[in-house]
Length: 266
Image (tube, rainbow, N blue to C red):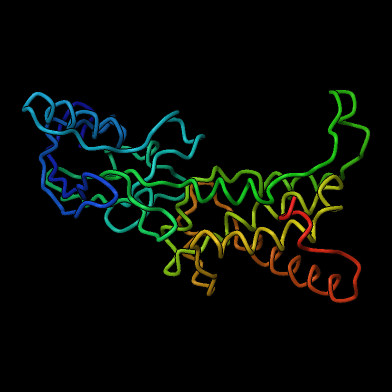
């Protein structure tokens, strides 16, 4: 369709008033949508019409709308973020749809992500993983100290690839087991690759694995749906790295070289 044409769409949206309320699908019309609208801008138009009609607007998460913050989160036609490669929901544009299309909208579905309202879920379980083990305890010093410990280019590139994760939770929503292994694997791999993170590496991976179980996440069974849904293209190789780090930690603990409970207890 041309840039000047508009389209009308049918939205089938999950509505839920609160965490303990029953949910249901409701149907709405998205009218006069242009190809230039982003997906969230389309929802803005629908909400404006709902407000004018005296109805409750659709609640959805958003913040930067630039594909950086990871806040935007919804399952579009069964796929987190809409299924476009390396695209967050806020970067999805309506030119990917046609006039008359029916679009199904649901929240992330995972035990670790309870629904707060409509498309908004509580993703604080991911924050708890970081609070448990996603850090280093060393003194980083001032700006000049940044170059005091040399890091090779391959190691820096590897760590940066892992650090690209924005914590949106699409990997959890896409996984049939609701696993957070891609998220946790990226965090563990990033820090384990750098010199500053290697001292606490055994305790970190042990604490992260325990925290995933404590917060209701499942385990990886190699479906690779997480990598397919990730808007930043985080690779499953980081899950493999985390598994290797975990096995190393168990071996070190067995011979008494480390205490893997230390980081979590602190």
